Image (cartoon, rainbow, N blue to C red; front, side, top):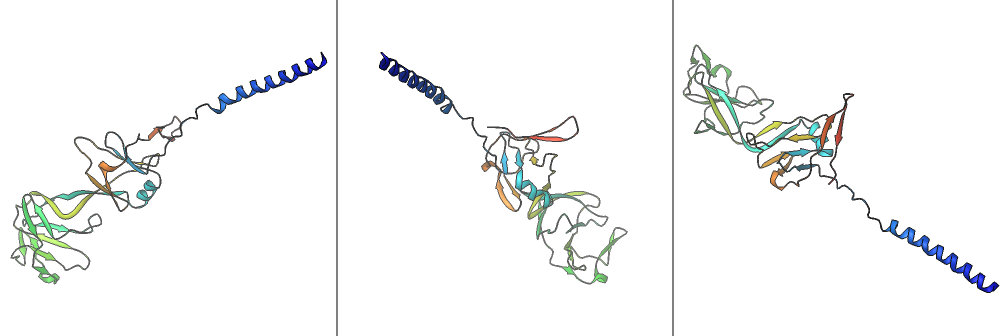
Length: 228
């Protein structure tokens, strides 16, 4: 009888131990929540808007915030009183190239170059003094590229497209530290961009849910990162 009771106690302990295992196993096999995948520094959303964030945004902000497109640069230039179109370098246009399209006419860099300031034709009272025989390059200022195209209607604006020079646009970093390049029907993004010196094909960018930047009641901004 005593031996029987001892065996019963042992079976009871083993049963409790088995029940403990059953209570532990389900928790160990419970599904682990999915870990949010980090989005790349440059990506696009489903609407074609392009986002620059993280390290790429920091580099872009320190580099002047300019993004180069694969679209030719076009500027509207108004002819002067002598019918001249002046194309010259500036802080925003460091190079002007050697060929342009004025309206629908292709124009090449003139072969006449003026290096002497005294011989440089200047527009006075709707006439060049001294007289200009045609278009010319003003090379009187070292380091400045200046082309004067003649024969246009005074005071009229012309669309001048620069051959071999792409346009660029300045983008603004938002309060949450990332850039957003909008893609709309009236102003679609070009097929290719140059961001931080690297060529980026918009159609080849990975698609991800965009981050959100919201203003809080205290005036600060908070960035929400979507979880896939």
